[in-house]
Image 1 (cartoon, each protein chain N blue to C red):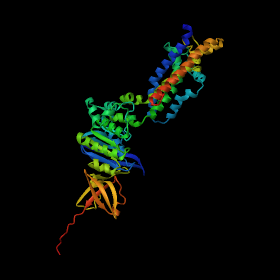
Image 2 (image 1 turned 90 degrees about the vertical axis):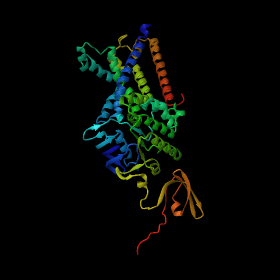
Image 3 (image 1 turned 180 degrees about the vertical axis):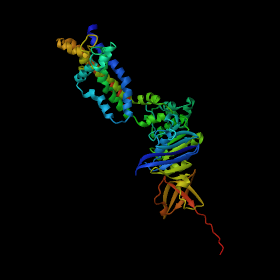
Image 4 (image 1 turned 30 degrees about the vertical axis):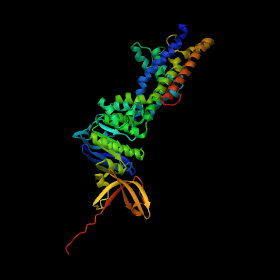
Length: 287
Length: 223
């Protein structure tokens, strides 16, 4: 259980504001901080990891206090057990893939298992400078996990990758999270990514949490009273006479949906969509 | 032969001791400078960099006054029967001060160019500041360290004004190669002067070639 209740003065797009972050995350959960650049997402992660000090407040992890302004408690970064995957990956250039992971490892026998888990065994003797973005990302993840963190913090880890690589790595991250069950917080500004990975999302705007809930609750339009609704990804948009045929991937299935011009004109492959229908349901009322 | 080689040996002894002392003191100092921000930091940096712009004789003169038997430091040391002027130890102290910016500036620039996230990543992986410094920070600024060490060494080999003021020209004590060259020219012994000069010339060239090759190798370019 992670309880964060802190105040920090931050600079946002609309000037300096006092960010008041109150976040509760269950142990083993996958939570996402969603919002525009400069909304304070990364700051919350840095406060949690101890890389930035809050101005006031309390941070508690599983009953242990990491930060308490009033009682002057501030556990240093290196004793907090927060695995942090940085946006630029921050791999140590002087070490090979294996040594990067080994440097962080609490249990030396796990090093090769983790490298294997992220599919980097063949490249384990390479230096980071010779790796692609996706490969660096994998090493950074393996390295963070090697330190056996209580919380895994991912700061827009897929932002610099192309769509295919992002998709692959998202799936791998999901598998790793399901296997290891480490509490994970993901900073993201990609709704699709949040939908796919997180079970709870905090929406931030200028340092204020404006919405909390499951991705479904937060992102889908609640005014639609659909009897069944799914979220899917557009794979292809084809024009057929005066209509459009959308090829959608929903969960693990792929299907076709007919759409009108007004529905389909602003859709492109890769977009996230909500597919819903209203069942025809006659109502009876006494007259 | 011993007499002929003495100034060269003394020069390299002085340069080696000075460079070692600078590596031990100036690298942590440069790290501190790169990681703090305080009012008056530019003043501290200016004092550190002063030996670059100051005429060596000016620096030498003030060090002589400061370290001499009647100077603030010299008079205290005199109580302990330690004398710095016209001794090898005095030369070392003067050289450390004189070559300080040549170690501090490249190394500080190296520290500052290193992404902060590397240090932060090491901390989040449970490593102490000490471990982070020796296993992540230092190995990743190798070119700057080599530059700092070589510049300090070469600069100490080449100093003249400060050495003359503090050390004079005592054989086997303070007569380093640059002073010996001057002495030999004054005595019209051009042959010996040529010998010392040629040795310094060739060594200086070899050192620079080696540094450039090492730095190009580290950054992965062709030699």
